[in-house]
Length: 68
Image 1 (cartoon, rainbow, N blue to C red):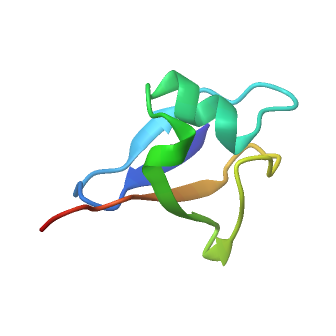
Image 2: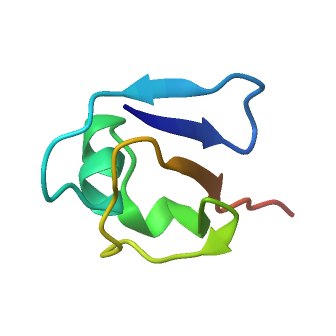
């Protein structure tokens, strides 16, 4: 399992791990457009959308925030 947290939320979601899975695969599964994510942390370390995941990883996604 991959644990995923969207920065605006309070709960971790669990995503089933698949061999060769990348951050961009999680974004697709959660229906997030890659451009809508400003920051990615994988196990507390900065990562990018092409980063490969391992079973048991924790992924933090911080969406882009706009305002005016």
